[in-house]
Length: 113
Image 1 (cartoon, one colour):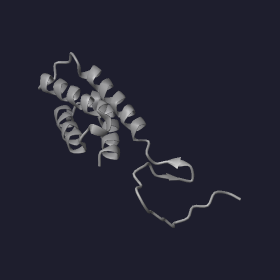
Image 2 (cartoon, helix red, strand yellow):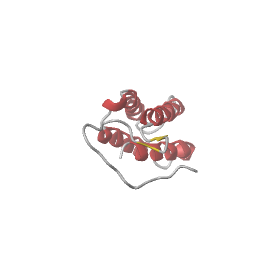
Image 3 (cartoon, rainbow, N blue to C red):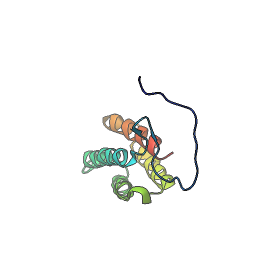
Image 4 (cartoon, one colour):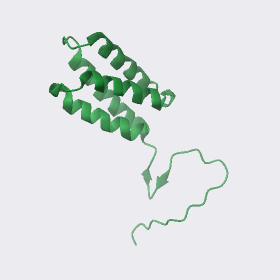
C-alpha cells in the first residue's frame, strides 16, 4: 500500500524542528540560501569592473548582501529584501543582467518572505 497523507496534525510540547511529511524534509533552507549565495556571487563577478551608474554603491550592496547570506539564520529577512531591492533598482533596465536578476528575485522571494 502506498504512502497516505493525513490532514490530522497533533502538536504538543516543544516542536521547534524542521517539518517532515511523508519523508520530505521541509527545512532545507540551508541549501536554498547556499544556492542564492552562488547566484549573488556570480552577479557580483559579472558587474565588477563594469562602468555602470553608481558602480561603487552596487558592488558594496552586493558585498553586504553576500555577507548577510553567509550569516545563515542570523540574516534579517527585511535587510536581505531591502538590499536586494536596492540592487534591482540599480540594475534596472540592464538586459545583460536580467536573467540573473530574475533568478535571484525568485529565490529571495521564496526564502525571505
